[in-house]
Image 1 (cartoon, helix red, strand yellow):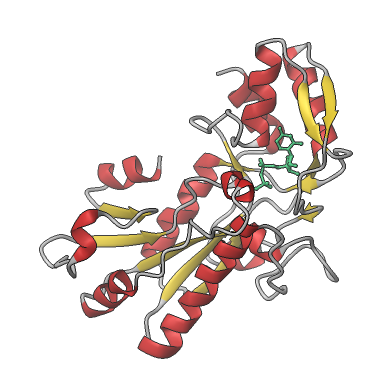
Image 2 (cartoon, rainbow, N blue to C red):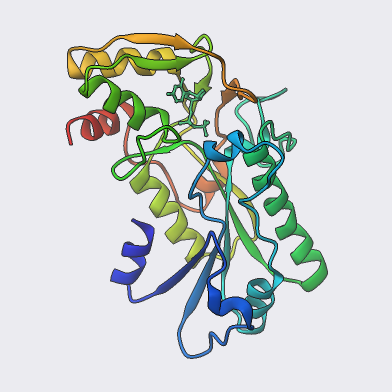
Length: 262
Ligand code: UDP
């Protein structure tokens, strides 16, 4: 969605989940207005299965150095998972401790910190987007998909929704369109540093299952093992994002209904 939005806007965005082969040599991004997004979330829970391999993180400094040279905005797609379970004051503001609880989250936190290091070492300014749980059309509903896409698919095909642990863990779910708006804002503003994007409101996994049953008029749950490294509570403090004029536009029940009825 983000790449399409930017293309429609005649901008080019490079998403560096895997450095493209041409980055073997320093790129020459001077002919086009190039904007760089680092480490966009391509896969998430998959990395939890690969303990010991921090595969999602690329500390290739060349994009960062080129970006500085050509004055290209750099955005790092961080994640709410860098915080781990909320401790102390809630909701979680940007200065909350970084206590990642899974290898995937640790790789995000490492990238997040690398942006600070680039700033200190090279003076590179990076907009760090700390997105909370995003859902909507196009989300993978397979084994490593998001909980909403998985639960909806499971219910539609007559399978039970697989609740991990006791289902009381809570997440702050954001509609994908609001997330795209956050990234577009990040390409335009020069805020420098991390900003949370979420809704400020959380829903437990059990409440989510109930809502889906209510919308679809059917469905059941089955309890499965607790996920290793599970984060219990992730509520976003979005005051910083709000101060830049961003706000989530789609209320959760509406987004869930729209997604479920697609
Ligand atoms: N979850 C679940 N059943 C599933 C998939 C996920 O109970 O089939 C839970 C998961 O344990 C977590 C929440 O739903 O507490 C959100 O998981 P997701 O993978 O969507 O995002 P995460 O918060 O892990 O990035």
